[in-house]
Image 1 (cartoon, rainbow, N blue to C red):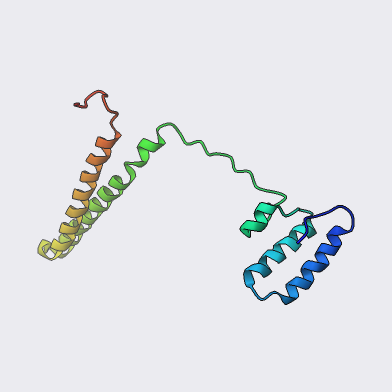
Image 2 (image 1 turned 180 degrees about the horizontal axis):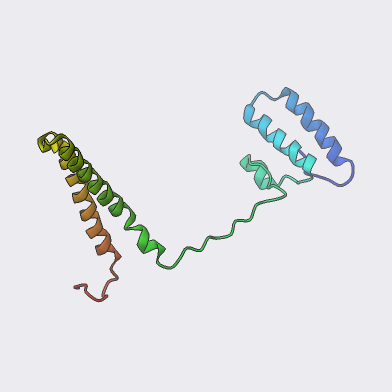
Length: 145
């Protein structure tokens, strides 16, 4: 396959690629030929590296992504998200069990709800302690070496 040339070489290459597309059975080769033809239509030359890798030539208009700046304390705040969710669900489970127990006047039937809430609270407080421990800076105030 020829590289883009000046003048009528592009038209000859397009015709040759279209003829080759009619005879090729390999789907990957067909896709590569279609990419090359699409690049010719847009006026984007196919580089040798993209031809060898079987990748599409770079698009004419690429979107530029700007890096997102997060607030300074955002990283330390996110480590407390999961413990707070666990504690919230634990309190919600226990409150729900208390309200149902008061309504039915039978707290024994809500034992499973109490246990579930207690487990949520236990996991929440344990992960909160872990988050506090990992949030400390080595050698900072209040930390033992």
